[in-house]
Length: 192
Ligand code: SF4
Ligand code: SF4
Image (cartoon, rainbow, N blue to C red):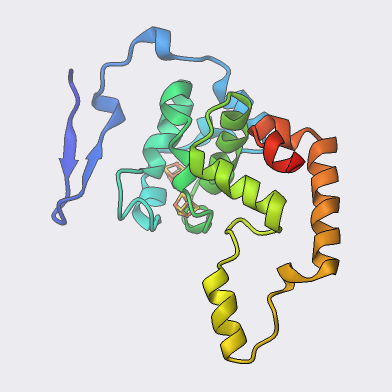
């Protein structure tokens, strides 16, 4: 299918989008503008220099290549793009090294906004969102940690106090009022 893999000395592989055969029906004109609408910069000004991939801590480890994603965006390959951006750590290293001032991190955030509205939400994001609404933090409080804190004579974690419960209630009211719970599919968690 014309797909070429670049194999690095470390054994990591990068699938090169420019060597893939792209079916015209996969292209969505206007995708670059949609990214701008959701807070990203104009991906059409990307030079494809590859600096972003070179400095990205995630790109070094897995098959996630910042430059390739920006290229998908330029082509309007929306379906290939949505779903890839969740692994971005938003560390902004790519931004520091981008000669075109694209800020790929913000592009990834814009892609997340678009993905949510398209209903492309990985289960772990739903879990993190539900935890945020229930506990005020994206990770569920760990009872084992609380036990250890007690043994060490440390203060209770704040999420156990009455004041905190009041704050959580307010968060619930807010996420429901703005429709965040419906958008992300966690209405049941908010009601609970
Ligand atoms: S560093 Fe900037 S210009 Fe270079 S490929 Fe990445 S986004 Fe494009
Ligand atoms: S912000 Fe995301 S894409 Fe940019 S370097 Fe960090 S992990 Fe990679």
